[in-house]
Length: 122
Image (spheres, rainbow, N blue to C red):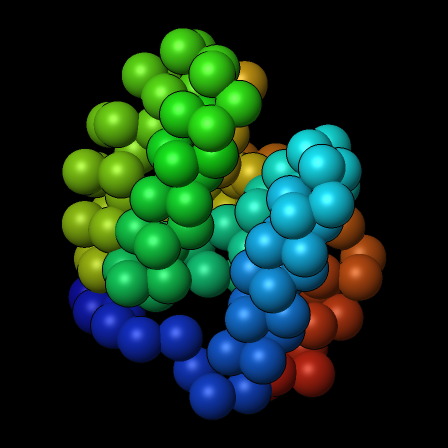
């Protein structure tokens, strides 16, 4: 069994781009766009415990800021268990991470993100 720790150097810029795009969209009040960037960051970082947990933290804070109780309550178990599952390599691939989808369900990865994984060599 392979244990995952930190996000690979080749993938990190893409992950950070999505987080920065989230902050920018949120700052402009574009909440749907902001959320989409968080979902993309989640997919890019979900195999790596620290990156995965960080996105769930951002999703939790976002839920509080927009006063979405379902998101807040849905993020709590994801925040606590997501990083552990990443560490042992047991994640639902392509899951966007929000409380609006089942936590353990895999989803197809959009073509653009697949290409990012290929460029990053992961």
